[in-house]
Structures are given as structure tokens and as C-alpha cells.
Length: 312
Image (cartoon, rainbow, N blue to C red; front, top):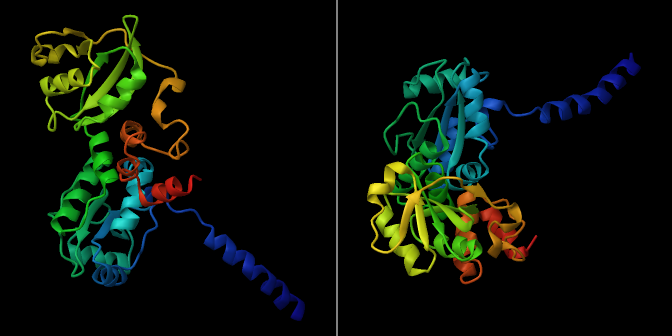
């Protein structure tokens, strides 16, 4: 009998380790979630951080899993949720405490994912909204929540929302050197991403910009000012708004991306070279790293800033 007890005792650590290493459900993404509402509200009261409450079907349908893979696993979004908010996950298809929380907030069971932003009293900071299932939409609501709560909005979160916005437009600028083009055009407010490429036998820089921040005529004027606009190409729908008195204006056609070795050339050899940057971060860091390292650093997440300072 003792040998049986001894064998069971040996098995317990193994069972414990196995349970601890159980992977997080795909629907939950990679956020380190809390699962207790009262604990989350208490933490919010102590830190002032809003509660990021995800009501999610687990196990869930294909759409729930995709939301976990694509949105709740985005590295910048994950870090923003964990550093600027108090993360809380509620299963919307489970009995017990999860069901009690659903009832308290009037959330339907077996529903698609819903994110609500709560203060320490469990009240919505911004109105509840359903069917916000993409990175841009979630990031924009995070920004609105932080603004409403009078908390600072990280620059990288603003960049992330802009980068994934469906409202971005593009233009291609021909110039003498696309390395300079990426740097100079990337410094323009409203330019979200840049890319070195070729078109019609010329080096060009492809720009994606936010028309709510900068109009196409303003963008062209800014590009001319930094001598990065020998010619401009835009989608056919934007030709009529590409007003200029000097430059050749054409339609984007035959564009091809330059090799990786020609992209974001200013970052090479700097402390930011090994950082895992989003396209928008890479654009802005590349634009400022050689002339204003502090500004470049301000566009990074806390973990990225730590790596940037140590050079690791």
C-alpha cells in the first residue's frame, strides 16, 4: 500500500506541471487575462487603469478563433492591453461565475466576442458597441477609452490604429533616392507607412497616408518641400484631386517593391535594427532615428524601449 501512495505522490508534480502548461484557448489570443471581475475592479481602482473586458465564446466558432489569432495576438495590441488596461476575460458560454457576470452586464450567452471598457465601479467608460472585430476598431476604442478616462494614449497605439485603418490612401513619389524618400516622407504627419520600390525605371517611395490628417494636395506639397517628388503617381480615382502646377501626375502602374536590403535603410546599424516593429513603427523610427533618437524611441512599446536602450 505504501508503494502505491509513493507512486501517486511522484505523479502529482507531473500532473501539476501538465496543468500549468496547458495552452491558452485560441479564442483568447495571447493576452495574460484575469478571470475574476471583483479582482479586476479592485485593481482598476488601485491603478486607475480601465478594465478591458472581453466577453468571448470559449470554445468558440471559427470567427471567435480568428479574432483570437489576428486581433488578440497582435503584439502591440497585447502589450497595450496588458500595460494600459486591466485585462479581464469572461466566457460567455459557461455556467457559474461567468454566467453571473453575463447577467450583471446584460450580455447574451453564446454570442460573438464583445469588448467593453469599464471603470472601477463596473460602469462603461464609452458606450458598448457590438461587431467591432478588427485591430483598427479595437485600437480606436482603446484610444477613446483612455482619452475619456483622462489617461495618456501611447504613440504606438495611435500608430497601430492608423496602420490598420481601411481609410488609408496611397501615392507613389519618384525621386533621386528611395532611401532618402523613406526617411523624408516618413517624417510627414499623416504618412503612416513608406516602402522603397521601382516604377517606370525610377526609384520611388510608395506612401500610405491618412486623408483625415493630410490631403493629397498637402502631401504633394510637403513632398516637394523635402525634394522627394520629381513625379507623383496615384490611383485613377484620385487623379482629379492631385493638384499641382509643376509635377507630372500619373496613374500607379507597374510598381514593384525594392529588395528587403533597400527597405528602411536608416534603421540599419542602430539600436532599433533588431526590434520587432510594425510597418508603421518601422516607417516612423526609420524617419527619425538618425536625427531625433528620442522621438524614435517615443514610438515604441515599453518592452521595445527597454530593448532599444540596452541595444539587446
